[in-house]
Amino acid sequence: MNEHSRLIYRIALTKIPGVGDIIARNLLRGLGDEEVIFTESKKALLAAGISARIIEEIKRPALLEEAQREAEFVGKNRIRPIFISDKEYPSRLIDCVDAPVLLYYKGNADLNSKKIVSIVGTRKATSYATDFCETFLRELSSLFPDIVIASGLAYGIDIHAHRTSLKSGLKTVGVLAHGLDRIYPSVHQRTALEMTAQGGLLTEFPSGTNADKHNFVRRNRIVAGMADAVIVLESGEKGGSLITAEIACSYYKDVFALPGRTIDIQSAGCNNLIVNNKAVLLQSAESFVRQMGWGNASSKISSAQPRQRELLLDLTNEERAIYDALCTEEMQVNLLAVKANIPLSKLFYILLDMEMRGIIKPLPGGVYRVV
Image (cartoon, rainbow, N blue to C red):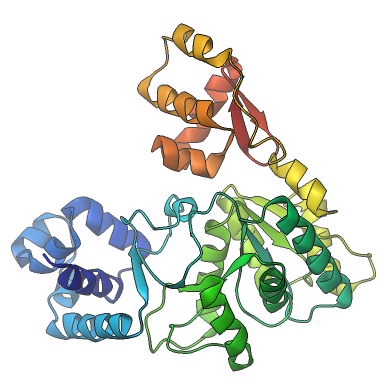
């Protein structure tokens, strides 16, 4: 199967009515290949446990025709399709149960960069939050010039985070709630164009998709899932950034919030996150780095560790994979799950057992290191 045909099948998988990301991943696990889903007989698909209604949709000729048109659009506009099995797929996102099976990307930022932070907030940002954002990103860029900043290209905090990142020399990725054939809001087109040269634009939606309200909620899970941490700089009692924070918590991501005065309506959401222990109070770039455990990330492993490795002969295969990964460097739990090839839900139990046995030690920010 050539790459063009493979892309058509992959796009078609995302267009089957009634098949979302979870079912699509189950289809891939059950049948093993995106091509098989569309070329296998109805009888074989039924035997694999696929409902007759979904099989009828799979066999609908118009489905592959729609996918063919989208593949042509992707090629013509130099968009990079990233399938869930591709090595370029965001490793932090892949363990999220509802991760998209296919992403469309235009840009040059590494979606598996060593450090990625998502910054979100209200569309009605105040100078308090925007001033903090500028100071925070300027300081963060001096500490980690290769860090990638993600947000949603919306009004307010989102676009300010993107523009400040560009000004600070950081790569920044905008996660869209629509296809790459448009930019919403349109007044952000110039910034979006700059981002394709210094970051990128990412979406799960094919061309022709409008920026409908429910798409923004779907977009938020990518903003949360692709990062090491989510920072909420400003939010009222309700808002999309709070949804992003809730999703990040469900993904075991670190969440930070900028506190505000109790009388500030625009800070009510952030204050509530902190009070309810759903977010760490954000004070500065320095405190953020310390909380994330990034301060000593580049330190060298002590010379005593090779001897220690020889003595630890009672490790299981999974424990050995974790230990070997952490011998290279301290590592955040989401990256560790990818490196050791262990599902996040299972990894936490193994890490706890290894911690109790004195093999590893947890650090702030969901980071672990060898004792």
